[in-house]
Image (tube, rainbow, N blue to C red):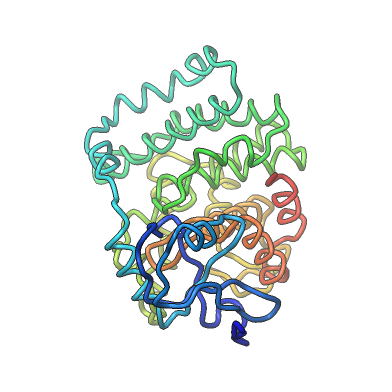
Amino acid sequence: MAKVIKIFLNHGFTPINQNVFKLGTTIDFDCYIKRFNGFVILIEKGTLLDEKIYKKITNHNLQIYVENKSYTKYKEYSLQHHNASDDALEKLKNLNFDDEIAHCNDIKQILSSQADTSEKLKIIYESGKNLLNAWILKKEEKVIPLEALKSLVESLVDIMNQEDITLSDFNGFLDEVYSLAAHLVKVSFFTAIIANKIKLDISDQQNVSLAAIIHDVGKCDLDESLLDKPDFLTQAEFKAIQAHVVASVKFAKRSGLKDRIILNAIKEHHERLDGSGYPHALVGKRIGQFGMILAVCDVFDALITQKPYRGAYSTFNASSLLRDEYKNKLDMKYINILIKNLK
């Protein structure tokens, strides 16, 4: 009979990426699924992944977890059996900043030749990632290409207002593994959905989506080993990460962004209603509407994205976490709107 571990979520267990499992291999760590307030072993360590068990453990309707103490074993297995491609790295090296700006400035004309809505969204998504990645490579000598990013978010908002867009329209091409550029564009997509559903005027939809697509740019100056650290952060390390908010605002101002509402949204995307956020521990209504929308979308994308130190939560489990663990920290109105439009 499978044993139940009476430990609550986030207190000893970490979700993992099921895509790393390989048929015919043997795992040397227990795999769990969540049941009520605890966890049940689904597959025990030492198990050979034959066809039946492999099908079971790679069922994406399940969220698989490992104990934190076994996470190193999982990472060793992942590195041994997951064949990562170098194509993405080569693509990054070949990006040309000026070409990507020109492409994004022409985005409306490019989209006009496409009839399929999902394909249009994919073009915006890939264009945004490429532009941001090209800027990150040149950030020491180039300012954020605000006008090109505005072209992208204007097209994104246009589509949101022409169609009834939900996550299903673009979930198929979103990156599962974290990168800064992908995170920025995904948060902009989620933000545009909420902004549209609460019927902000078009200019406000564009402004909050622009804030979203640059909200975390300050992270490009952080040490990747710090962002990828699987252990608890020291106080000094946590302060270093918190500093990315101020850095993002500085990058935006240096690039010519003067709109105070947009800058405040960037500044406030880590503030929490109960005062537990940063950098200013704002409480309740002191946090602006744009900042609160960004906060919800930022947390949601962090949950559904695979990080070096943990796997991704399923959209169902991410939704449950938002409702249960963030109900006093984030605005439930925006959480519920986002969740309603995940299907």
